[in-house]
Length: 68
Image (cartoon, rainbow, N blue to C red; front, side):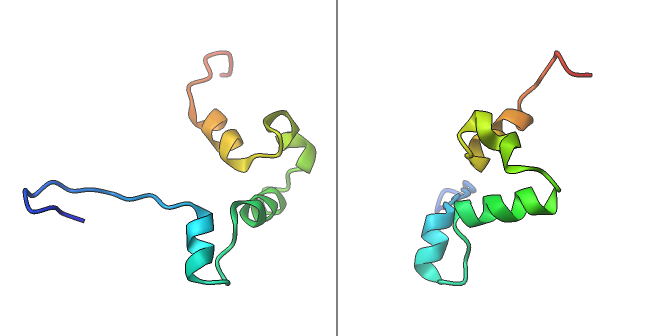
């Protein structure tokens, strides 16, 4: 989206907003289950993040200098 001054903006909406538009859109919980299944992960791998997929994705996106 571009405003009248020519600045470009991006809007990020959560899965709850998507569900409000269409009942066929998954919620974050449903996405979590699909991601875990697709990656062949066990639900226990998200346990340290309280089962929260968004927190897990944020964690794996940050620099982790202790890993090579």
